[in-house]
Image 1 (cartoon, rainbow, N blue to C red):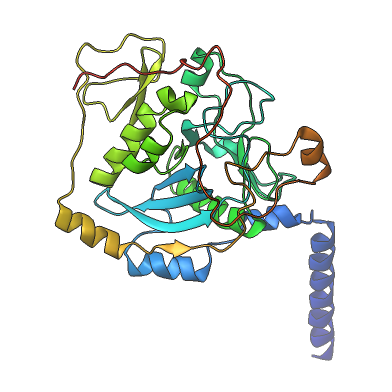
Image 2: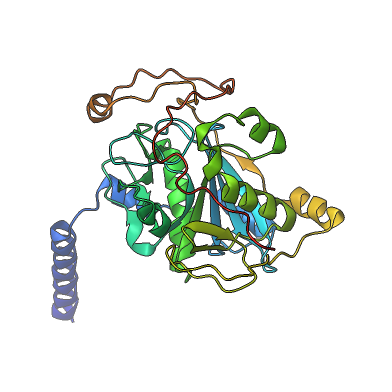
Length: 335
């Protein structure tokens, strides 16, 4: 029986050699590809588990320029959203107001969506996903530009740049939601937290005429904790319409639109807010609205003249008025 033992041993050695050869010939994943597969941190998963929120539950992202913050919200079973984690935005482009033209170094404001094809695990800025600017309304208003991303590496002249660790987590939130069957993840970009005080402080900003739908979505979400539904018609956004409104900005709006809202009672809203995981990510904010954004040369070379400004002091903006300042201005929507 010695020959049988010897034969079995030789076959094991051959199998091991074949396995090693296959592994050696297999393509090696890049660091970014490996980063794209990282799961959410255990602390985040634990927080979601404690709140009975599945890791693949729908995600809603809000970005606030002036505060340099990105929020990740996830849906509970009842459709109300919980704030899971707030990330510092390391850098963004331009100042307050919508992006209008290619090369203006501005980060957009408005309502956008991340689709599965928008994920960029091979981005040269560590990881990235495209938020979908310009959307249909941007194009109808003649706004140009492309490839507006949320990415890593902390450098931006129009994108929203995070730390590498931050983008890994945000990317995982988006990836898991899309993998669970969501067709897209909404990314809503606001100039600032649209409180009455902040609106009054920026009352003389030339971009204020474009902020009405953003303010409406901000207020509706505060009342309902339901993700705002966005339509387009009459070359404008329509927020939470009761009547059917599609995504064609050039279509005529219904004569009566109305508003679909299910406000929370103060007691339930307070209870839900208390139940939010409310995690805070650490990191730098290299961009305040009073800090000039770097030029293309700085962006390409990886240098920046910006200096860290934690909690930059807000001030009123001085934005040159352009011929299309009123583009996107909304008329009052019939309720």
